[in-house]
Image (cartoon, rainbow, N blue to C red):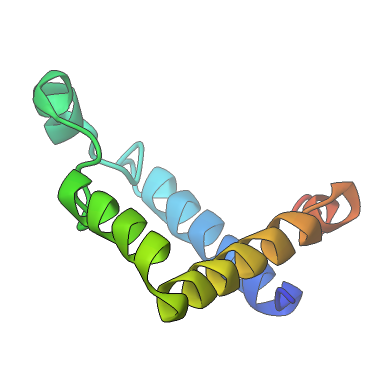
Length: 95
């Protein structure tokens, strides 16, 4: 289950950091210049997990019980997070 207090605290911290930057005349707290420069050349997925990693994981899930159980646990965790996000939970961020 999500820790709503922690999530609210993180959200509030981000809002306060943004407000501080705007108050200091810095405009946005996010610098998009690198994204604007390189976004057309990025091949996805571009994070730490590469296409060959995904293919290896799929093969492992087909071959090994431990991999199936791990994947099922990850799926259950993701499903729990998605189920926790509802209108009431989101409204706690808008105060």
